[in-house]
Each structure stands twice: as C-alpha cells, then as structure tokens.
Amino acid sequence: MKERKLLIIIFFVFILVSSCKQHQEARRPISQTAGTFMKKSIARNKKLVAGEEVQIDSVIKSNPKVKYIAATKGYWYTYLVQNQLDTITPKKGDVVFFDYEIKDIKGNIIYSELELGPQTYAVDKQNIMTGLREGIKLMHKNEKVNFLFPSHIAFGYHGDDKKIGSNQPLSCTVTLHNFIDEKAFQKNIQLKNENLKNKQIITENKLKDTLKTTK
Image (cartoon, rainbow, N blue to C red):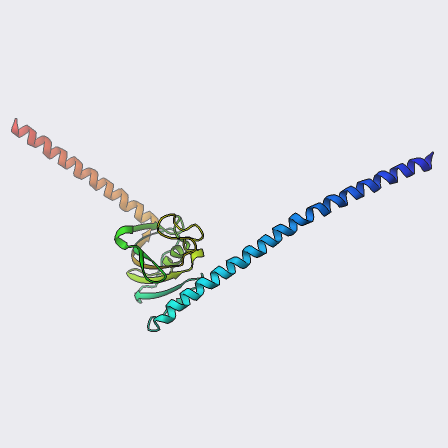
C-alpha cells in the first residue's frame, strides 16, 4: 500500500516537472524574437547616426576655412561672433534671451529668425530641442554660433510635423543676447506690470480731468 502511494506521488511529480519544462520551452521563441528585434533596432540606429555624421563631416570639409569644434554631447559648432571677455555661461536657474534660425544641412532656410521671433528660455526647465538646450549652455553674452545637430538631438524620427522631416540633421544659427537669474527676471516682470498699472492710472486720471473741464 505504501509502495503504491509512493508510485502515485512520483507519477504526479513527473507530470508537474514535464509541464514546467514545456512552459519554459514555449517561452523561448518570444524572448529570442524580442532580443533579435532589439539588436536590429540598435544596428539600424547606429547606421543612421553614422550616415548623418558623414553628411555633417562633408559640410565641415567643404569649407576648410571655417573651424568647427566637436562637442562632447554629439554636435559640432563654430563661432560667427565670439565674446572672449566674458567667462560666465547660462546655467539652470537662468533665463536666456536669444534669436535663432533653422536650416537643413545644405544651408537652405527652414525657419528664419523673423518667423521664429525673439526667444525667452528658462534653462533646463523648458522643453526645447536637445541640441539647442545643450548648445546654449556653452555660449556667452553677445555671441553668435552656428551648430550642426544630428537628428537624434534635433527633432528625431518624428520631425516637427511641419517643415522638418523624419531623421533630419539640422544647422542652427543662434545669437545669445543676454541671460539673467530667474529671480531677477521675475522681479523685472513685476516692475513692468507695476509701471504699466501706474501708466494706466495716470491716463485714466487725465481723461477724468479732461471730461471735467469740458463740462
């Protein structure tokens, strides 16, 4: 009787182990497929980046008189106007005032300065193009810099859904006019609002006085 019970237990254990093996084997193709997809995706991205770097390198070599500097963040830049007197650059907590234009890698204008208008940007607190966010932080006041951005730090795969296409490297010319501490910026806004209110009050009082005299 004991031997029979032991055989029954061994039988069920065998079934349980066989079932677990089957489940494990059934999952392998899914894991392998996911791994293959990731490998292909990485290889495709590397090929894309390499192709864009060839385009950028071609632009740089086409004009050897212009000295481009390779940044550690994966873009290239050259000074059109350089300020060698100042040492301070924008940092998180600063508000930057600048103008810029966007061209394709061949130099054709996509968005002009006039079209984009004057820019006010809170460093590392607003969502802007990655390359632009990093590039601004190396500039000094009153400098003008041309940046060459590969697409992965520009508008990437999706573009901007308007004029900038998928995986498009860009040339951006940035003129940094000034930058100030965020607290000073808020204080300036407050003072402007107060001055505007005072002007409105003065205008209203003058109008009242005019109406009184006409009566």
